[in-house]
Amino acid sequence: MNLLIHDLNDEEWSKVSENYEGWEIISDNKTIKPCIGCFGCWIKEPGECVIKDGYERMGALIHRAEEVTVISTYTYGGFSSFVKNVFDRSIGWVLPFFEIDHGEMHHKRRYPEDKPITFVFRGQLDEGDKAKAKAYVEAVCRNFHGIIKEVRFEEVPDGNDKKDTGEAVTPDQDKVILLNCSLRADNSNSKKFLDRLSTELTGDVEKINLSSYINRYDELSGLLAGAGTIVLGMPLYVDGIPSACLRIMERLEKYDTAGEKHIYVVSNMGFYESLQLKNLMSMVKTWCEKCGYIYGGGLAIGAGEMIGSIIASTGKGPARYAAEGLDKLLAAINVSAQIGDIYADAYRFPRALYMLAATSGWPHGARKNGLKRKDLYRQR
Ligand SMILES: Cc1cc2nc3c(=O)[nH]c(=O)nc-3n(C[C@H](O)[C@H](O)[C@H](O)COP(=O)(O)O)c2cc1C
Image 1 (cartoon, helix red, strand yellow):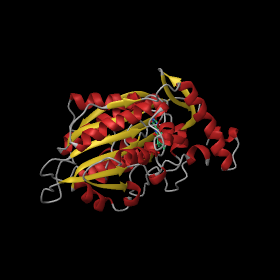
Image 2 (image 1 turned 90 degrees about the vertical axis):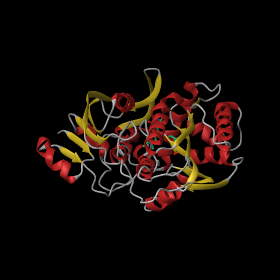
Image 3 (image 1 turned 180 degrees about the horizontal axis):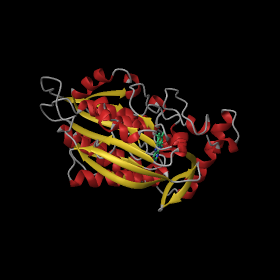
Image 4 (image 1 turned 120 degrees about the vertical axis):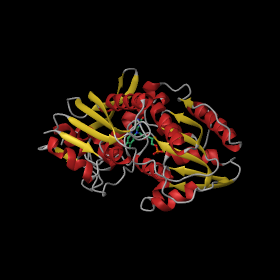
């Protein structure tokens, strides 16, 4: 069996469907739900997503496939929100446990094989875009135990470049929205980082959880379109932007903006090395270019699960670099300045210790769900 994941519309699909007869097809039937970051696919139903919407068996499907093809609209350097949603829902394909690969922390395999994957990006891509797409899928494959079979590019009209809101929106320069894009909502690390930032922010500051607007994306896009400054707080998902956040970004791209809009980003991740966030930071920047927004800068936080748990109470110890980064970002936001991206690793906290602590956390979480350590290795 071969597996195709694609975001083609009906008309586009009808032109190529005969090439994929006998394949398992994962396409957008408009019912897919975003990953909520619960890790149920590791500690509750190992290998399978706990959200039962027809997209829960991605890990097993990837395993059974001889090879995988991914066809996606090129979106800010990576996948469209639908294709990214499928990848976010596929992490049960790997184990929660860690290993070092190419000097970086990554997940161990659940299944014995690495999977050959062909990537097809569609859109109006220049050489810079193609380089970004390649860098992104290299990171995905390293993280996901994939082997890049081929990366192809198809020139098609850019469907997202028409502005569809009628009159241009004039952002209120005093309005600052802190958008927590983690669907863990108030329990997220993203929220904790945004909260620390918000204490000394000036202007008319509003904190919003994206999770409160999951079925009201148009309403949220309208709110965001009207703000002069947006600070995005988000976790790293499969080396990129979480699909729920991408969906909002795709919608905002359709708004015509009259006047300045500044964007800042605070992103955190599970692995140790903050540099693994470089594709995500680049995607936010690319989105700003597409929308005509001013990218003000970003903070990339490694070992986010640990730093997030202490940042409310201290800016010292392992949280030192993250706290310093937040201070610099805060100063920039308050005067609408642009700064270079800041990469903050845990201060003087060895990677081996972080990995040990994270590793022992998974069986502990599984026990609460009535599972034994060996259950976490379940294959489907
Ligand atoms: C679907 C999914 C994909 C993830 N992918 C990555 C990844 O590629 N690299 C990484 O370092 N962490 C990854 N993580 C871990 C999160 O980035 C990490 O748990 C983060 O601290 C969550 O932040 P939050 O509490 O703000 O949601 C992933 C988590 C989930 C649920």
